[in-house]
Image (cartoon, rainbow, N blue to C red; front, side):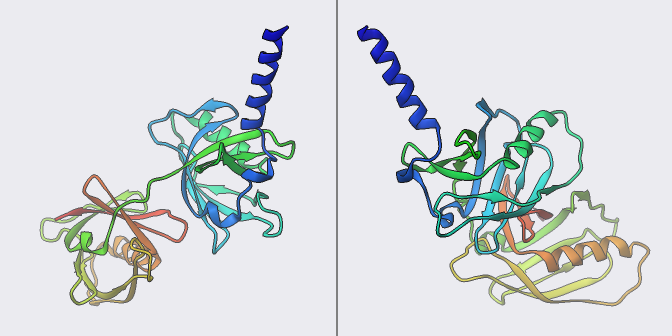
Length: 263
């Protein structure tokens, strides 16, 4: 009998840990801000080479991220008077085919059912997204904030990719961007024309980045399409990150616009 009681107590304790709805673990929507790795979906641990993640821009009520293959973006709603409530709007994604589409289908399917969120065992770095019945759908772990600063960009960088497309230079010119931090400006060559412009950051956001008043020379060259795409990407840049000695210029939803490699 004693053994049965202990087993029942263990089951109840486990249920308290994984179920949603405990008021003390409810969080305000501001606690979602930032990027989170998706570590578990529908009770299954996620183990994939490209770790799925979701980012919350609370100020804009937007989400972005990667569902295991494709980039995703969308909106969310949360009731400030009811801490812990959460619902996602229609989520859009790119359309690449990858070997592991099952993970992506699980992630997108779970997000569609979310109605609430809360911490796991009083750890604000781990949260659970739950359905309307209070059942856990997804576990998220806060991404470590990247230690980047504007000074990391100093110098000249070859443009490797724009919107996922490889940039091929010519024998005469390799497209590049240079950062002159002392003068808060950029310069470079798009493969045909040279560019100049200003760069700015938002206060308190070390990885924010915006280019203003980007001007070019006006030569006509055989490949003007690539140049136009690069200029559009620069105008859409809102932030940057660094990994493996490369710079990633990112758009409003965290989408990858340009990949740069040190010249």
